[in-house]
Image (cartoon, rainbow, N blue to C red; front, side):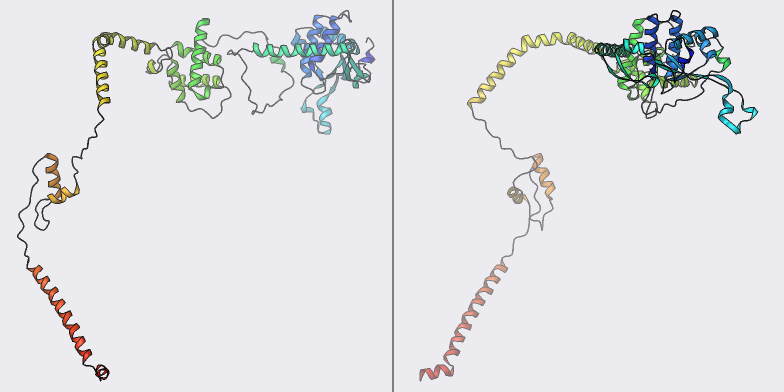
Amino acid sequence: MADAADHELATTASRQLRRADDFYAAARFMVDAGLHPKAGRTTMRLADVFARRMRCNKDGHFAFSIEQTARELGLKRRAILNHALYLRELGLLAYVEHGSKTNAIRTRLGTAWQPGNGYRGTATIFAAVAPRVWDEAMGRRISGTGYTSRVVGFTDNGRAHACREALCKEAKKRASALDSACTPSVMVPQDHRQLQVVGGKKYTPRKRAAGAKNTSRGNTTSRPDTSPAECAQAVALAEQVQREVWWLGRGCARRLGYMLRPLLAAGWTWQSLAAELLTWGVPGYLRDPAAYLRHEFERRRRLDGLAVCAPPALPDERADDAGTRYTAILRRREKSNTPVWRRYAEELRPELRRRLAEVRLSGEEEPPRRLEREPLLRGSDQAFAESLPIQAWADVSPRDIYQARALGLPIPTGRAAPETDQGWLEQMRDHLEAERACTALRAELSNWEAERSPTCRTADA
């Protein structure tokens, strides 16, 4: 489209694009097809810059700053303008707003503007669009014309191409996920609970943008060269530390190994490191345990709270993962007990087994006898009662009697009680006989009075 009138948003024949990947793919197709004789590698570099800027706007619009783009690509101002013209002529860009010298700050503030507010020119704003040639080559069916046209379907070839493109994107996504190795330079894992604030200044300050871009930073850490075997060993020890320290679970083992490498080289073991880290008071949630480790190590080193060259006196025998110590113990025990065991197996064991068999056979012939055994300090109650002296005259306690029986000594007896007076028994007998005699006399008197009564006399008459 050589006519400049077709480069406007209202007159363009291309449809709107919102995704940066679609814009870059369309630019790649149009440049590789040779539809513009002057478009080439530099045009694609400019298209890549525009695609990155598209991600900041939901409609696919982006600002075109000639000076900033020239500094970013290292090109002259005239080259930026020429290759932007090539993209417009290929139907990939359309004007949303033309840049001018009008003060955008004054327009924005209106009557509140003052001379001290400054000056900022109106920027050129482009919209990324897809030419109809690219849509037809991709097998897309378009409804409508111009910027507001939309994709409504695919042809057979377009559907097959879309499936291949989706598979390629998925394969690239998986490959990028696999290639993202956990190295010390890996990005810090982001937490979904942490809000990401997007904003800030839109333009880079002139002094910082004009500075050198490729200045290499010096190595701020004085770490010696490490072999791959030492790196692998540090990673393995870091994994062991992770199993013991709960707040290192979500960290990367390679980054932890990188942070712990100076301590491991200084003589610390993973047991001593785990014991040291378990004593630290850490917050309840750590987004990056490796960064927290580095910060704490530096702080404790400054405060002399953690000596790198002097590990704590923690015994290395705290764990025996390889089993070497246990194997050495078994070998020493076998070496010291071999003659004794051999003598037992050759001389004593056959005789013991023979005697045991004889005892078992003899025990089967005779029925087992039940042994009745009385406790040492407990006998029958009757025997104990008979052994007790008369309590009224006794001077021997039951404890003395139990002690004598337990020790097998003769049972002590108290002093002899006086003979019992039996007169009270005779008195009781006399009392009973007198009561019987009185009862008989009362019965005879009652009968005699009954015989003498008047009733009995009348009956007799």
